[in-house]
Image 1: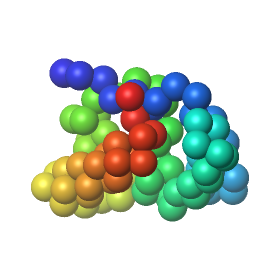
Image 2 (image 1 turned 90 degrees about the horizontal axis):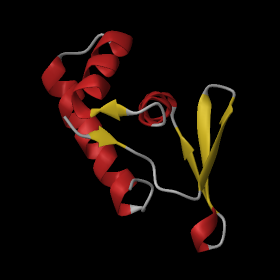
Image 3 (image 1 turned 90 degrees about the vertical axis):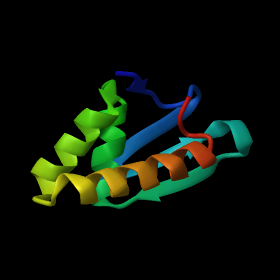
Length: 86
């Protein structure tokens, strides 16, 4: 299974319960993530696969695997479209 990885030159930090991402490639664009997106982002930075992301979301938020898969795939697509994934 392929590992999902963040793009290079992306800096991020945890601010309270959320993650703030700084994309220094395009003039310092900031992205603030909610708690679910922050969980997924943190897992991505540790070298997660799609299956492990889905499992983590189902465990953390007590939702079924189909809902988690839909939500994770949707968020990964948003990250990809913003150039945050390699």
